[in-house]
Image 1 (spheres, rainbow, N blue to C red):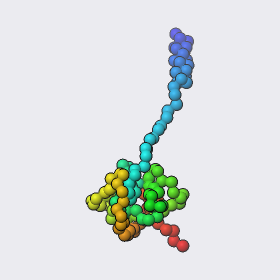
Image 2: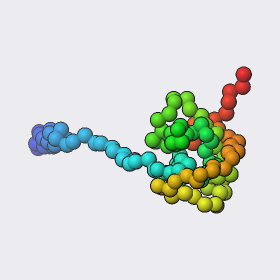
Image 3: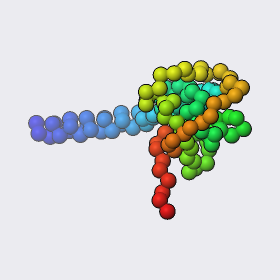
Length: 129
């Protein structure tokens, strides 16, 4: 009887081995999609809504095109740029927002950035020299 139990247990283990060998490896896929086309850039956090004129400083743009924030950023490795939190909904801004596909106004407002961020929204402080 004992031999029968051991044989049954070994058969079950070998069967599980063969079954698990036929399964596909687990895969994780994240599809972010296209970066939003916003006239003044977009917030660096999902759902990547368009940011209003004045949130990002001029260093976030090249040739009038927003170079990035969030997962689509393709600028320099150690990039840091100024932002103005007065235009950040996470800091109480309740004004107008542009929509994806809108065009910038002819005369942009003056920028008054007070903080620096990296391309993924983390605050950056200049090292003391």
